Image: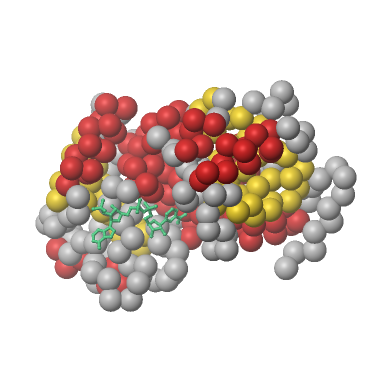
Length: 271
Ligand SMILES: NC(=O)c1ccc[n+]([C@@H]2O[C@H](COP(=O)([O-])OP(=O)(O)OC[C@H]3O[C@@H](n4cnc5c(N)ncnc54)[C@H](OP(=O)(O)O)[C@@H]3O)[C@@H](O)[C@H]2O)c1
């Protein structure tokens, strides 16, 4: 446990969720605040959907409340409670961080996708001009598809169990980034012809889950990336590694997102 030195000058940040006991943000932000000498603390707030407007109204009237990170089930509902939204939140339709300005306006944005891209980029992969296979079109997948297009990918194939969701997401990403060739398809496509694949489905969270794609059908050299953090090594990554594919783990997405969110909410981590 970090030794927090909270005083009357400390800026308070929150993480809101329902349920709350699984959230990881306090364990990421508070040790960083301490390590970097930032006079701030992040506290978990258990907020139910019915109470969300009242909770945000309460935070708004406290000048030492700097902002919050937002997770399930509040990311979409927060959109209507923000006074202003960044481009990423508007594209994705969900906010996962919000900060108060000096005049107590609430600005929301979404860093899920940029967190993934920053994590993989720091790991040595450049998305510029690349062909990307994305398994999944849920909340995280939505943010990642926009961010990968924004990072300069030449093409993205979104493969999802519910094909209509993949097709709808592909239409939206293509409309936002016309230079990127985005298509939606069924989950069981032959995954050949890609530079990188990313698993944004929840397949791999539990032992015995099916694989999101057929690893044996990937081209040699295709990079395989994951956003699941626990287990650290999913079956997908284990099989890909065994076949000699370069892999990227899920944890850097969270770490890079924390760095981006810290800068956004006004307490940047030094490089
Ligand atoms: N590293 C990070 O920082 C980070 C951040 C956010 C999320 N995540 C992880 O990302 C994963 C997805 O989260 P989410 O919030 O995007 O969830 P979500 O909105 O519920 O989306 C789940 C996705 O998985 C697919 N899926 C679920 N069960 C499936 C099955 N049995 N067979 C085939 N496809 C299945 C869904 O397909 P349908 O559309 O057909 O239902 C959908 O594409 C979770 O494992 C979560 O832990 C990691």
